[in-house]
Image 1: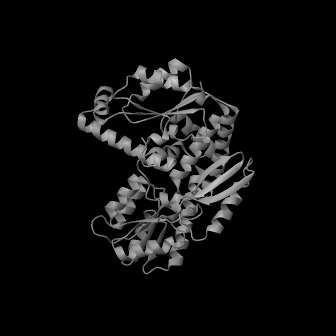
Image 2: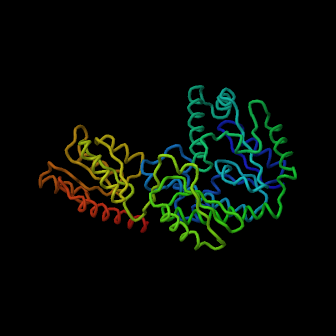
Image 3: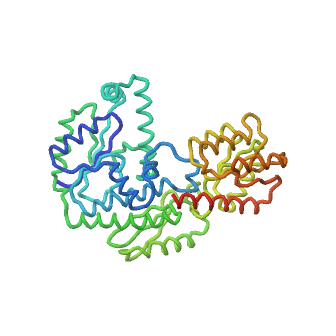
Length: 408
């Protein structure tokens, strides 16, 4: 018996099937939480940062930070490390989508059922009324679809192309499903061989290269075969040769890499533009101003200076962003209808004192300046502002945020 991976829709009897398989095969169960903990240990990132890779919610700043891509890369390394050390496991959860198909001794299983069966299971297992059950199904399916898009290049998490077996749980009992999977797992086609172990080592090498590349802000697909690493660029880039050379310079430093091949993938000719995340620059800047044309132009000018920003047009939206996302620096206008800038400053510093706030206003007085600085503003600037002065102030605020985090 080798490796069985179980990816399941919510309320498809996953826990029961996994328990039955464990009893039948004796395979040790490896769940997402275990791999999240290992990924956090390997990366130095918090487990909460790693877990966000599974969430349907994507930060508005992710296009600048690549946080989900980095978390997925470390999860791959965590799993690849385990697969290189162990031939026998029962892998259950989101991470069941991570093993590449080239590892022949992994049996890939999907558990899914129709909506009626799953709503009934939600009522039985969690006591959810029909409407709440439907919401839970939709939320769970959205999470799995986004995860599949992130790690398997498909928006359909139930696509048969991802699996060796798709088990319809609305037509299959738990014991029957476990028996079916056990029989397939005993097939010689999924037996551990020297060749399949080599592909597991290739997966580990690719994962090591991927974490190194994402650590430098890049986002490319990585695979490996017998020491040859293949880097696939899936977004349009203006200076392709320069990017390829930079990627090679990172990958060549990883032990075990004998050669590097770069190529463009099917996504290269689509409209997305390749953007490297620069971790030295501010990448989580929230711009708050009711002058729409001004603040949108400001965002574009900052983007040209590698500053990642998101725009909102009122104080209420700013406070929602502070509560729901993780801006690190805020550029805030004082005079806005509704909740004004001074109130946003007060509330933000009360709930998220780590956010550095730069006041940028055209209507403030010296008394306003004194009050803002007393409340904890990082800086107070007047419109019209020199873009270089604002960029420099943002960098200093960002450095203060990073220094605080490094000292925690």
